[in-house]
Every structure is written in structure tokens, then in C-alpha cells.
Amino acid sequence: MDVARIREDFPVLKRIINGHPLVYLDSACMSLKPLQVIAAMREYYEQYPACAGRSIHKLGEEASNAYSAARSKIADFINTAEPEECIWTRNATESLNMVASSVKLPKGSKIVTTTLEHHSGSLPFVERARRDNLKIEIIEAKDDGTFDIEDWKSVIDTNTSLISVVHSSNVTGTVAPMKEIVEIAHDRGALVMSDDAQYAPHHPLDVQDLDVDFSAISVHKMCGPTGVGVLYGKMGLLKSMDMFLVGGDTVADVRYVDGKIVPEYLPPPEKFEAGLQNYAGAIGAGAAADYLQSIGMHNIELHERNLLSFMLKSLKELDNVTIFGTDDIHIKTGLVAFMVSTVNTAHDVAGYLSDSYGIMLRSGAHCTHPYHYQMGIPPSKGTNRASVYLYNNRKDVEAFIEGLHALIEASS
Amino acid sequence: MLGQPSLDEINDLNVERSKPSKSYTQKLSYLSILRHETMSGLSRNAQCVLRILELSESMLTSEILEAARQPEYVDLCADCAGGDAFIAAASQLANQGLITKKFGKGGYRWHLVGAK
Image (tube, rainbow over all chains, first blue to last red; front, top):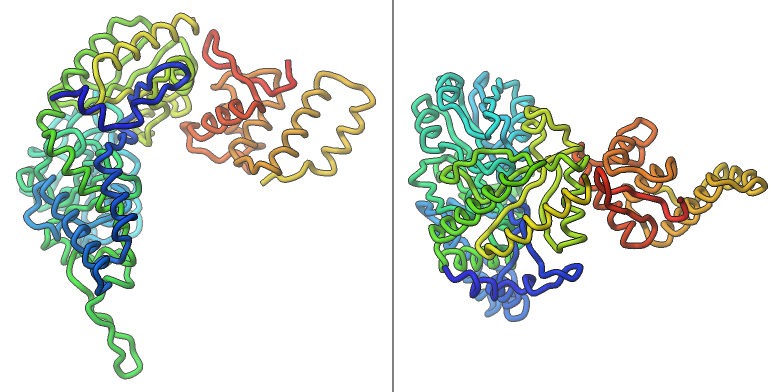
């Protein structure tokens, strides 16, 4: 993998921030955008900014073709059985809410989730349980972000209807044993909702091989535009789900019979895509999937693991730094959460590294407050998170470690 | 939005004008910022940070976050427990020259402009 050449695709990496070349270590929050994605979206706006699937003219036809192709590209990216199993959403959060709100679950059944979930992976299901008076049980992650598989075996029972689990944690980076979890869940008749917001951009994702029932993806984390997400669902389940939003584009017909309005709805994916869609965003998402696949997800995963090993080794050599999450890089996405004991809050680390070194990383509780409370860390103190992606190199990690050295000295 | 300084705040300031002090200087600065905010449309979190910094000559980041959770600020300071939005707002204020920050022992220390 030619990282130097890849970096040329990302114009923002040419920026100088506070006198330093930009070092971007916040891809777990927002990935940078390559020229190929920007060009694809620009082409839509410049050449065929029309309605897809409804306008019978040349621009409409071009928009329809590009929009349809984008869905196929995403479907190919995660290997769905058919493109129509991919629903466009605004982000993974909306995808998770769509399932939590609309999937049919038996009365009195149980939902299972974990302490490691992003709030977007837990709260929609907490609220669903509250809405329908369902039971909900929480599996506690170990301090290093891994799980004891025996906990899954004991908590998932035949009354369990759905499991919401983060495939790759946005705070510890740990990768859940998804295949085993799916096997246990299906054995007991439960559905599995996989939060792939952090997993899909960094690892090869094959939803058929994993046999998950639903998967949620945020395109902005995988070199695509903001405001675009994907919900994958097995077609049979999507067909049986209640609608999330209704209105234009969701209907085959709306008849007026005997003084009543009688809708006849379309099958998925249109069933879940009410109103005018984010065509440019979807086209950008398709371009992002193409771009990542042209480099190869296995290559990206390997590259990140090399950088991650170097980063973990370097951080461990620093006094005053505590690392969270497993250091087994084979079950870890390319991010490290840590705390620096010489400052009072993680925000000061992020501020100092940006101000003094042009290094961008994340601070706070990363929308995973339960895990921070579990670890005895008040959200306001928070943790820092440095995350790498395909465009990062060893120099980025070296600059980050040098910046941390200076910060510790200045704050001690 | 806070909008213009209230009549009570202006009256308090007029009383203090006859006996200038450090707190008077700070409050004068604060009120000038409040007027400025009406023009520039500062966010609620930015206003929150300004109001908290009025309390002290300087505060550590953690102290600002702690103060923001106190009941007297609940109507103005609305952020998640992580405090991300407060600190982002404080950084914007610093870039606008309305407050200053200095890195040292324990982290950043924030000052209202005009305060020592």
C-alpha cells in the first residue's frame, strides 16, 4: 500500500496548522475526504442535479443511474445478497433508530445490549424497551473492552428477541466476537443488530458471512460525505418491519376510495426512504466505497495495525499516560484511548496538541458514558482518542508522541 | 439568548462606577462582551463560558466544566456531561480575542479579557 500516493488524494493533508503540517488522528470521528469522492459529488451538482427515479428527462435519467449504482457499490462493499437490502439513512444513528423503532419484537421479550455501546447503539433500544414494556439486560464489557463469551451465553435466552452490539468500539477499539455472538443469538431465536459505524471503514465487512440481521454504517467515517448512512437488513426482516417515515417515494399508489385515503406502500428499500433523498451524498458514498475497495480493505486493515502497534508501543513508554482497551491488535480497530495524568481534563490534551503541534485528536467521553462510569472516569474528565486511517503514516505517530512529551513536560 | 445587559446589571454597574475596583473592571469587560454578543450572535455555550469566567480571575478547564453544572447556570449552559461543546465554545472565544488561555501546570487556564 503506497501511503505517500494515497495522501496525495486528500487535499486537506497539505494544510499547515499553527505552523505545523496537519496531523489528523481523529478519523474515528470523521474521516478525511479524497478527491475522488469530492469529484463524484461535484459532478452530480454540476452535470445532472436532478431528481432520481421520477423525472423523465436526460438529467433525471443520469441521476437515477448514478443513485442506483451507488446503492450497488455499497451493497458490494459489505457483500449483501441484493442491493435492495441497503437503505439510505442520514447516519448509523438513524439506522439504529430505524430498527429499534420498527422491528417487530414479541410482547414481554428481552433486548440485550452492552456497556460498551455508543449511545446511538444503546439508547434507541432502551427507549424501545420502555415504549413496549420489554425487558432489557446489559452485558458488562471487561475493563479492556473485551467480552467474556460466557456472559453472552448466559444472558441470551430463548426469550431474547434482539441484541444490539457494537462490532468495533469507538472508545477501546476492541472488536466484538460477532460470529460467536450471532451463533448464540440465532440458536436462541434472537436477531442481531450490529453497529458497524467503526468497523466498516477499517476492516473487510461481509454481512452474509457474519449472518448479522442488521448492520448500521456511517459513511462519513469511510471517506464519504457527512449526512449519509446505511442500514443493512435481511430482506425478509425489512419487509416485515413497520415503516419509519411515510410520504412521497414510499408508495406504489394512494387511492381515494369511499371518502378514505388508502395507501399502498412499496417494498424495501423505497419503503424506508421517504421524501427526496440525498442523491449527492449517496453518490459520494458509492465513490467512497469504490475508493476504499480500489485500495483493498485487507490492505487498509494491515496498514492500520502496523501503525497501531507502533503507537501502542510508543505510548506505553511514556510516564503519566494510561491506555484503555486491549493491546491485542488482532481484535482492535486502529484507535487508542488514553489519559494523561498531568492535566485535569482530556480536552486540554486535544487543545494543546492542536494549538502547538497541529495535531487533531478527540477528547471527551465519546458518547460512551456508561463505559467511562464503569471505569471510574467522570465524563467531564474524559479520555483522549487517537485514531489512524489509510492516509496516516509513521511520521504522524512520531509527531503525536513528540507532542505528548512536550505536553507532559509543560503541564507537570 | 442573553441579549442586551439587563437594567439591573446596568444599574449595578453604575453604582460600582463610583468606586472602581477589580470586579468593576471585570464586569465592565463582561458587559461589553454581552453587547458584542448581541451583534455577533454568540452561542449559548459561549455565553455560558463568559458568565462563568466572570466569577474568577482565571479558571482551569476542569473548573469551568464543574461550574457549568451548577444549578445557577442550568438555563444557559447546555452541554452533555463530557463538556465538549463548552470547551469548543471557549476556544472560539479565545480565537475571537474575547478571552485568553494559557497552558501550564494542570492544563489550560482561561481568563476573561480585562481580568488579570
